[in-house]
Length: 480
Ligand code: FRU
Picture 1 (tube, rainbow, N blue to C red):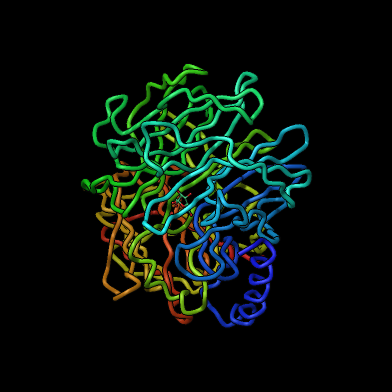
Picture 2 (picture 1 turned 45 degrees about the vertical axis):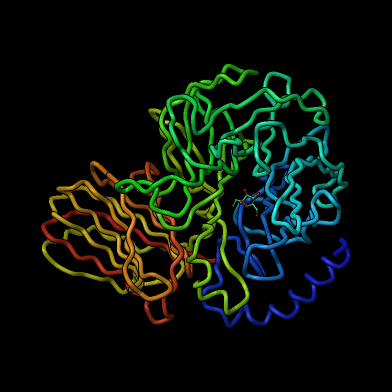
């Protein structure tokens, strides 16, 4: 399929699906999602010439993984988004089966993208090329072809270049699998972005005290945060262990100190970025105000995919809201960007309340698209349960110091859960969209992200307290 065919086919599809949107209660209000087809990783995040650009992995032709192009949204403020024609579609031999994930930088006023050209052969083997494309305006790109070929020692699971500049030199990290089936991140350096010198493995499943830590590491990102350097990565193949690594694949980070220009990156433990059900392949960028902002794919590659109710409506998956990152005691703190306050209706509902061995709901708390802040002032309760729209339940168990999110499984309605240790529950900050929830715990120390699919009439938010809790609740209806 050539470039023109892609664009033509996509505009036909968009015509056909537009009508569906108004009939589909699960279309999201303030999260980015595909008009049609499957969305996965956020790509090429950049604040360029006054606009925020979010590209994303997109298969417009089906709700399954397939040939990917780069879908494209822009925004002036991280709140209101405009969708554009896809910016990279597979048209060349080196990307014939997909323009896979990658990143963006600004160079002398141009936007430069790096991405993985994916080539699949009939015998099931694949090839991978790290490619470059350049644009003067951020919309129309000229492809420059492969700039990095597969180095020795790695399988063709080698992809997702992230490029940045440090001390006058360009660096690239690529997600990789070694010949010994171990996940790794490979570092390259360049002076001109065209010739790349391989430096070696920056981090990996067998380095820095790690042992058997996944068979493939996808979507690396590497940046300074506070006084440290942070490597984000999405390892595949971690075994679930107590409350850790419960999803099919995980995304998390290592904090360390990079000896700039070398492969020396002594780092601490892997820490998961999100404790919910649907979060993978996040990417960050630094905006003009110097903030480090992250968006993740609110989905995951696993069997669940085939069951999501939106599939009948021709689309699947979404991105998280933009979250600002900070580093505190070797941990990443995530906060919804303050721009999202723009979505609030002027009047909020605010309660100061004390609940004692009771179940309680307030009519004003009901809502499908809202933001809710709960501050726990005195918590003597054994358990606090918050049921949301009959599909989700947040449970804090004080004696176990455990926060749990239960949700109704899409396929059969059975309850599945994710949880983590929270020594003392101080606050919850909840962003609720038609079919998605993001729960920021204790100022963003932990985050739980999940999709859910409730009926229109399931609107209530119900508190059940065993013991006594004093709390302040504030709720805004959100509107685009
Ligand atoms: C992560 C990923 C990337 C790849 C892309 C393809 O979800 O598998 O490694 O580039 O998706 O869409």
